[in-house]
Image 1 (cartoon, rainbow, N blue to C red):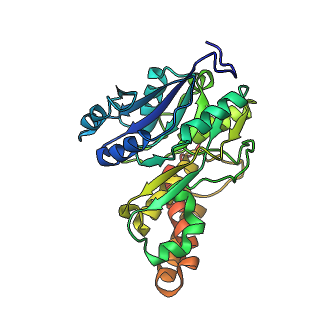
Image 2 (cartoon, rainbow, N blue to C red):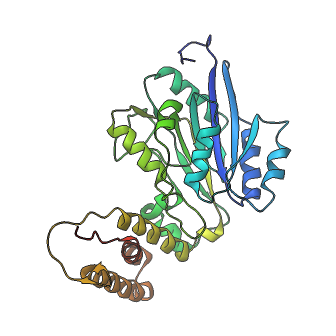
Image 3 (cartoon, rainbow, N blue to C red):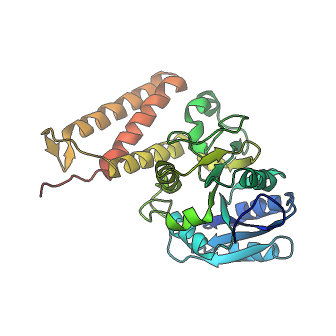
Length: 318
């Protein structure tokens, strides 16, 4: 079925949520969907992918079957990319709108996407604002450094105007949409995506950037906003260290070596070890002796460098 800008042709949409053992959060998210506005001429489904959950996820989904057009799919292989690819295979929509199991959408969220799809039928990529909301009172140090690390909590805001995406301004995983024909041709890398014991994301970023590089058009949808809930467990330096360490693992796995000879130690360039150790010592000293605005930079550098060391794979000469 072709998509047209009139209401004569129904617009088929799949809203996809991938979840793993967060049934309480999922229930809050689905409750928010019961309050959204659904525009005329839209046939939509809410597809929830159970990614090998061992909690009450299926019970939560069943509670909403008479309140939402919700449908369950199962993906037994752990990992967000596996779950995303399952959602693509199971989807019925002309567009797939991606969100998470720990968000609350604004009532006009779906309407804003529909308006964008209809006004720009040539585009393949869309995305909207993500606004973190912290449960409880965040620690004072976190409040002070929040502008520096807002991205850790998926904060995404490109402003109040409709603007085009480019390689360094793209939507993020909790709030974006892809036209199905491009999505089917560009699945998610199973080596990326959160899974137990390996919290490396960026699977959606690689897909979106590849599409933009191929010439696909993408647009910011400022009215398609949602709130991303941040529990107390993520309001700690331990969580920040984990996030930046895993970002470093991603960078390390994508590292491109140059042709200059360099000394190696334990299969990694020696300079990486030196940078990791000095950054770690600097962080530990400044964590005690300086302000959050100063030591956060050392936390980021130390954590990322250890991650790069872990993710780095030397390219052996053939």
